[in-house]
Length: 105
Image (cartoon, rainbow, N blue to C red; front, side, top):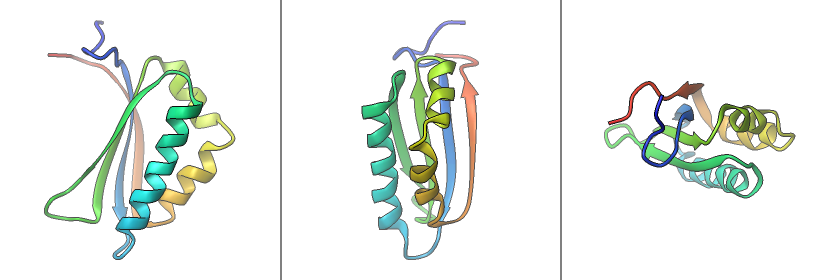
């Protein structure tokens, strides 16, 4: 299987439903979480947080990883849980997943 153009083969993703009035705080916490990731976890490539234009409390996040071991290591790092939980605490619902490249165009 070929890599995507930027070398990505593995992704983590989150679907976040933020409580009314907490969007600004969520943006701050998510940025802190992924800034820590960028500075602390080898194999991290990039992250994006997109916001639903029609439902401003709905966000979807993507982080790209060089390899599966790096992604797994991130989730078991001692600082992961408190930073992730701080984001999730502002949500009415959230789901996460791990993904691998199926096709690149």
